[in-house]
Length: 475
Image 1 (cartoon, rainbow, N blue to C red):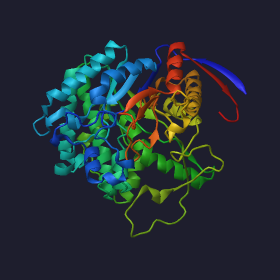
Image 2 (tube, helix red, strand yellow):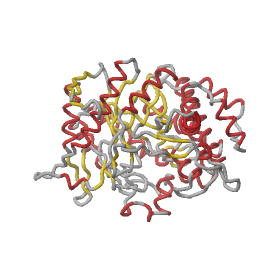
Image 3 (cartoon, helix red, strand yellow):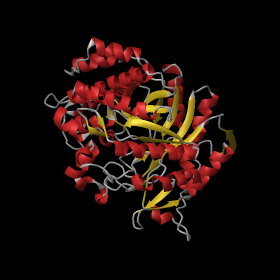
Image 4 (cartoon, rainbow, N blue to C red):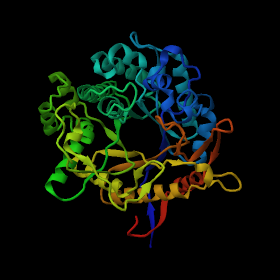
């Protein structure tokens, strides 16, 4: 066992994250303002754990003052959320802003700033307007990209003088991967070509709003939040290493490279063409992506991904899927979060930090999500009713240890943001797995109670020092 006392760098962010749809609820929402998530919930509620979803969520829309006070209680320096595109507009075709919702966002920002908490906003966190999915096929249409850019410009016009950190998307690969690649989420349509069309549209949309933001000369930074999976081959054998390289191309570099380097990996394009995938990028599209790379990125890191060479030939009658080139691999003896079914390996933080340093020009970045979702947390309440989530404190501490170690080795990481500030709704899992520093009690009018981890996080924020005892073999 070794004791460590590691200081955070000057100005290092210790924040937390959430999204609009996972917190706000539907108060004040017009019938025409459903997002993709809202439409999914309305059309397929049975797949959401215990029927909970975005309808009430945590009721942040009505309780934001109370929650922002709690942000102070748990020591947040920054809070990342989203502006709900589907609610920000009354008319997507004409680009007419909903002044009621826009005014709510203003009040949230002003309240946060008054409490000394820096807001950070994504422009889309799975909140594509359902109207645009129904009428245009969502990101399949260039017109939707243009509507997104107009929406972003309206947002910047109203808030960019107060908010200095902006992101185009949170995890832009996720929706189309779940819907069109794996067909496991509403509307359950397998279409690998559409998957890549959506990927490209979001890369292009990011570049276009970066361009718009800079042309207006706003005083801040703009980037994108990605969820790169730190990918390890089963072995050092050539075929396993090749499987990991191809997984990385399809799931990580498809967004990392355009955002930071301004271009798609040539090998990815070759593999796509060789499998009949044609997302038809124009020369103009590629030029916009080339010349409008991001200022910084967020990286959401939860677990490692392990692969090996494919176990069988890909069937000729099955549509192309990247799984043609790899199979999953479970590491024997791995540490697990059994509530979520995810491996725990805090060293992924160091490895991703070194990758960003060595392969992506050491661009500025933040660890924009990291956290531990646990089922049945009420079992861990003490006599006073406080959740004693020492497992979460341990999880955060070990990941921060590796992040601070990476910073000592030259990584340009400027902050850590926990998922999440409060317990909140997740797609399908709803409130099944709890992630928050603050409990949301569904049995008691969604009342809030700070967990042990919330008190610990406050101390961490005040002392600006991580004190941790580690078994060197376990860390």
